[in-house]
Image (cartoon, rainbow over all chains, first blue to last red; front, side):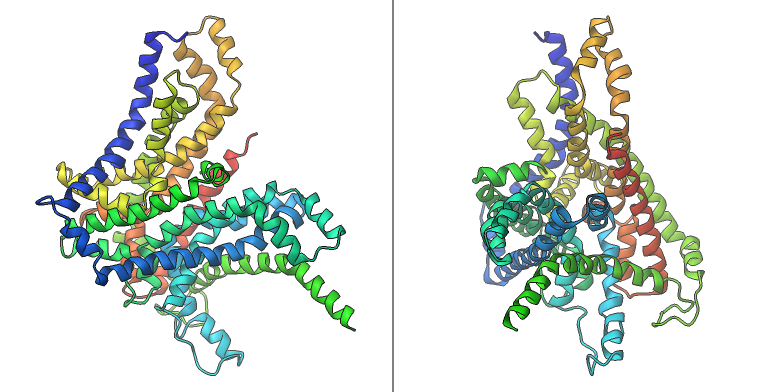
Length: 278
Length: 268
């Protein structure tokens, strides 16, 4: 039986991280909520945040988030399959480290690297024009294309890491059995690999898409100046127009969208189990 | 003939994953290598291919007072975050795995600590910025460090909780049976067993803090500058060989720290 004394001590130990998380996680949300309905208990800020002018930015952000996540998944499927089931065992760890090391690198710097590749006089254009693949240089930088490349570059390692856990648990004997019974690669993928790794894919989506939708640096470094994402609206409202109520309302709308989709995903116990790993 | 084409196609499909892996590695490391190559340009605006190689921009970066100050700031904030975040993470990990508190309390602590994983970073950053202003803390080092501590807490907590759960509880029980009080048990049994995980946690926390951009962007104000803020500010003005050299320095530091952390994290 724990004594009262031990419980007090455990309580004190628990209170340190809990207080920090309360002060920096919960209290700011309360402040934002108060500001979003202030100064006179109205929904004016929300009406502004959801007006057609800004609704576009909101939809565009979520759309970019979902689209980029889709591309990451399309790449991560063959990559994690190869790593988990084809790669010789002794190279597997090296492979996983190589594919996920960029997680720990600075994303501002990583995005900046693409400026050199995609610019009109950049490495990619010189290569393509120099080898005669293209006649004239492409305007890739500061478009949706360069922004999407930048996002995939940053978030692919997250998706690979999440998908790998799922793919590793997939029993390879199932695939062999299906092949022995004459299934084509496509059938093996659709009937065995896909259903068994779907929870992992869903978890990866939930982890990554909101970060992309709420990103600020990547669109600022590589995106087109005309396509505004939600984080830029918030930064502008915060630093330039000092319209805190509007930025707070935007925060809550975005928070509800992300938490709503998380709750939707958590309805499935299998997705919940994958998410718990994070 | 048809069967040969199908067979070729199928063999091609079988090779597809390997090809995608190779392409992904090129995709991930190509741009970094390009920037590293272009950092060796003698001219301020490198053109491909470089006529000759020079390290003058590395020297320029290390002699640039603004950049060196940002580097020292980032290192200092990272150090405090690493130590504080690991200590708080240890307290949270102990609460989650070993504490005698009621299950509901432990669940609540887990959920609180995990908040930055679920709440979008831009909302976290903006919220802390506003809250700091409301309570009169304003902007500067202290809010930045607090924000970083909150940001790294889930990573340190869950890394340490995983190791805590693997520890053999019988060792601590045996020490207690031999008459050691709880503090002695913690200090002489638990802590040494956790040491590699603690070191890994501190290094990961340092790397996270060193690279963190958005929270710092909202909390730093005009007085504090860190390496990511400094580079972000320069990127928007234009790409230069100076910036390439600075980027390479930043990448080498974060890759070194994260690499050391990964090695330590593997159980011996």
